Image (cartoon, rainbow, N blue to C red; front, side):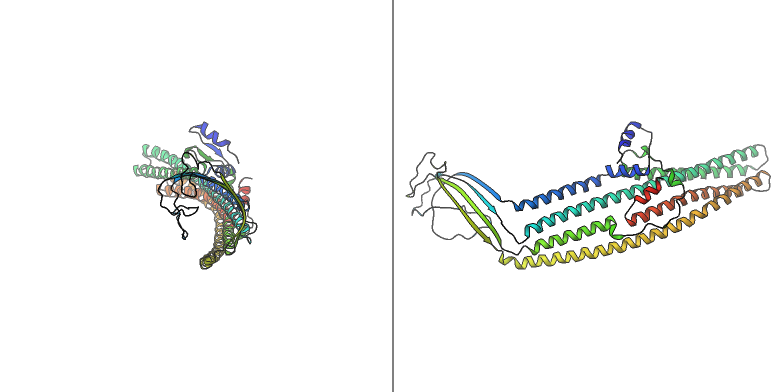
Length: 453
């Protein structure tokens, strides 16, 4: 991607930097914020894969604590506490209710590892990988959308500039006629009404020019959304867009290759991967566990308090190794409901993919029809220009010889200006049709290559 033009923009001040069509597209892909957003989402998804893979590693937990508390204990069962409101007590019942406090301490480590999981971790990694693929597809779709919008903005800017050129030619012709008529009126060879009519036509031509310049400014402002910088500093140098592209068969359509369809297929794969995770959730979980810890207390079995700092240093050690199995037996209805919901999501996304394919087909057909119509118009506008130019010359000659009136001249000039505008826009409409076909097909390279010959 070419980014040197940005430095040129900063140094050029009020002057415009001339960008080719490819340079404009490259700059938009480099600088448009939405592209950077998608790039960071890809990076986040890649980190998610690494996070999912950490589930294969053993888990190591360490703990250390010191406390000052009473040491009373009672027999009895305590049901599991969701919020762990009551602290855990250990030790024998001493038969008294002594509110004196003693120091206590504990340190320990626990290592836990799942040797097998019936494919749950592999499914989780697959879901994370599908998430990254979806983010990458979204990035490609964003890049394609920005490139297409930038190319369309360039074509629009060139079209508005051609309209300005044709409108300026109309102003020049009207000004020439106005000067001629004023000279004839001053010489009393024509009535003063002719001069007024010529001035009105000149003012109307200038209004048309101002409107064309306004459209150009709006086109620059729209393009600056993708390129950045001040609109007045942006100019597109695309001389190839001023010629009529050679007739050729329209770009073929493969809906599956369009970035929009590719992204939707990635969404479907992500939904399927998440469904596979749910399908492997209703299995026993096996944990191989090992623990080592030490405890310290400032109280004896008879309830005597040792006093001082006794109990702050752990002095009784234990260790153990075990195998734990857990099974969420009561979770089956909830998991089944989540699976049903996820299956519906998969079907919905698959139906959406079919709709996208149908929409792309319709978009491509409309673009082909637009292109064919634009070519037919472009073949006819040179005839329109030639006839309008001849009519203008004849009307001016008739007026100078006294056989015609100012209305004929004004009408002929308006027709010539409009014919020149139509001719310029007809060629650009063909290019716009090619861009529409390329956008529907999901590949802008043929269009960019043809426009940069």
